[in-house]
Image 1 (cartoon, rainbow, N blue to C red):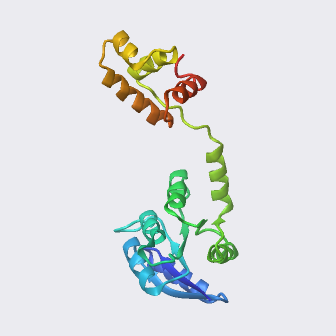
Image 2: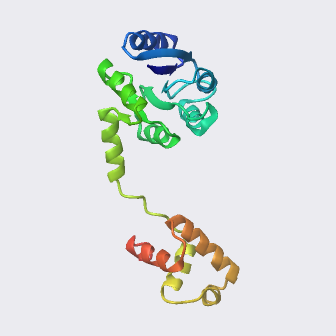
Image 3: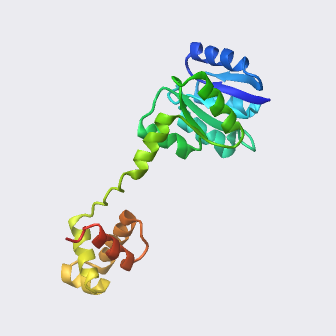
Length: 210
């Protein structure tokens, strides 16, 4: 038996889902929550296998509630969370997945798709509606945004690229050596690297030193 908790701020939606799922063999609806805070609390009490989570709810939204539930606030092992919502923007999808949701389905999906998604998530798999899967693939195919370096950071990195030490860069630019180090640390952070050589190589690959 798969134990389900429904979290949605619309009573009609909760009642509809509860009725639909209660008629499915192997499903038991053990609780209904009207917001994210209540979802976390009920999950710790009712110990569902899967939480059906809406995104936009009062007090605590679905993303935060998902993170708290998956993070162990509702017990260990935590229930799995399946987002069931009307929203499908890239940011919302990514935020939910990063929060720990095991699936993301749209409320407009056919009943069979929702039921299959619940069973997949309960079995330890993932479930994505076709529309959401397409959005994720498209997002993954987009090139990473180019880091934006300030004029001073660019000057420092250009001088480093031609072999100058921090002390030499400081003298050439008329700034303190500690300031050079600060600029380089900011460059490392923006480029996601940890050393000068990789910073220069990556900056050249991205055309940041042109």
